[in-house]
Length: 398
Image (cartoon, one colour):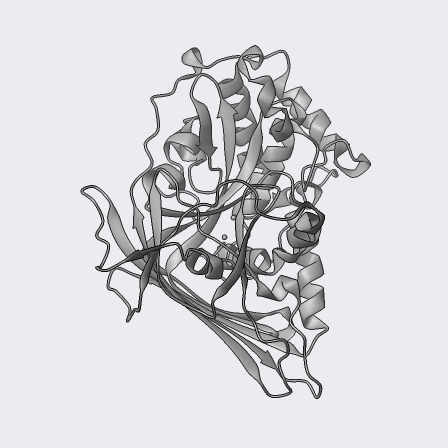
């Protein structure tokens, strides 16, 4: 719902491990794209500004079974690489200590990403597993944590609703489908509303029974809350559909943030554990469409499975809504103005050395520093969510 923006800066940066002497080409059925990011922090105040750890941290695109990332250029350099509690990789950039009045810090990144399509198994309700087939090791994906605290007083009505929808049904895929259909009928997509902040589930589906409003990550967050409350593992996945059709040009945060994006449409969806197949995408605003009359369309027609998707962060325990609000308030009350420009293209941008994205082995974050780092990683998450909201609506695409 998208992670990106300031968030991607890392993806490009961190990965300074293996050096290539020639351009990396995409293998057979893979597609090569170039991602360019430029972010400028401008101090329009009368006193110097000291960049926080939050300002210096950026998310890193993961290497997965469907994408491989290579850095072509990264400036400034990377000081450290971290892993947050949800498994996302973060890079701390080597910023100057202060930004003087009228001064600025500019970050420039160019990366190449080899992407291939995700392959989904043949699914059917008759073949679905039951609740007893869910591994106990996935209990953390059913916990009332992050933005999905279904045991809190304000969200209990959503958990009660999920219990009613489930009833006595033990077929996981059928329960997921019923919840998708319910949200699809009760929540409308906010057409034309760009650069919106993320919402909690009770904001997307009011307890009053009136029609709810929410875009890709809002509806996904609501579904995750419902799934977790009945014991189905789920988390929020973000990524961008690579296409020249998508562009964004807007301003928000009281003029403190300007976004320009070309060639990628950021998106958010649910990853749910459905035995016997494992983790599957459940995509309400792209895949589900009532006219299809197919309760499994949210999976079969998900953007993750039907488009070239640049995967970004996942969230299973971090309260990204609260952190977003905290970040936007901090920036708006400061003298810092941010301009972010990103572009994805099949044609290469001018580049320097090529460096492959690799994953660190284990968590290299000193334990006492872990929690400050978690909170600090949110500035790029905030911009990512704004970009996903500014992208074209996915719902109803065949």
